[in-house]
Length: 281
Image 1 (spheres, rainbow, N blue to C red):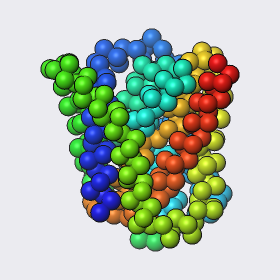
Image 2 (cartoon, rainbow, N blue to C red):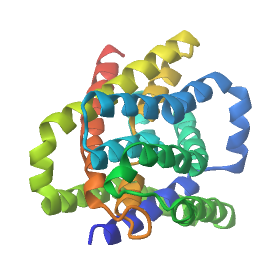
Image 3 (spheres, rainbow, N blue to C red):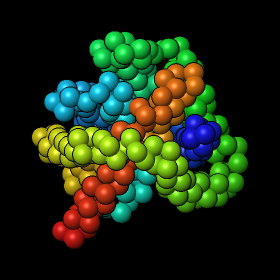
Image 4 (cartoon, rainbow, N blue to C red):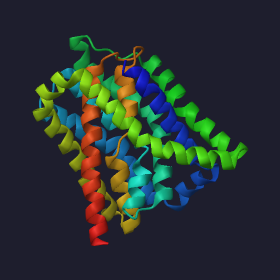
């Protein structure tokens, strides 16, 4: 049941991202290389490695081990630009980082998840059909973004109006998805909430701490640093749920539980972060 909710939600989120993108935005990569490099390194390289270390340290069962690595592999969440705006960050940079990570992870997710699955999954009968994963990501991730960009250039006013509507729907739709998953799997979630909740919270806190440290090391300004922290900490939970639940990939809704918990905790942690930033500002 949940998969038929998450698939249209993910498609709408990626379409909304496409509506907010401009082809000329990609030229900004060369004008602001350091904050982009730090954010992409933190999100695509560092976060999966931290997740792998935590999954081993907390001795997670294989299904949660793979689920934790999966949410860490996913690109930035669609709400990161809203959080960046609230924190006084660089919204244009946030949109660019979400777009770049969404494109790059089309290639990195199959690689990392193949490795994670071979590491702990095959012994318990969990396998990854890489071809199906690539096909689903192309249809649900790349195609909606391309359509959104195309609509912006063909019908700018309509694209702006659509983007405003979808922007308001994104968070409520994600809450609906989380509620449906909790109702379906509340016993499993409550049974593992202690260890898995600590593990997920540790992942988010380490993501925030490491990304802030890396940003300071390369001397990004305060606005860029806030954006990098939010972008690395905020993951696309809808994509992780879609991959875990998809009948053509893992077909395992329990694997989506780390993504559900991450989605809840990342909003709590990042709202606290935004509050602290605004108070200091």
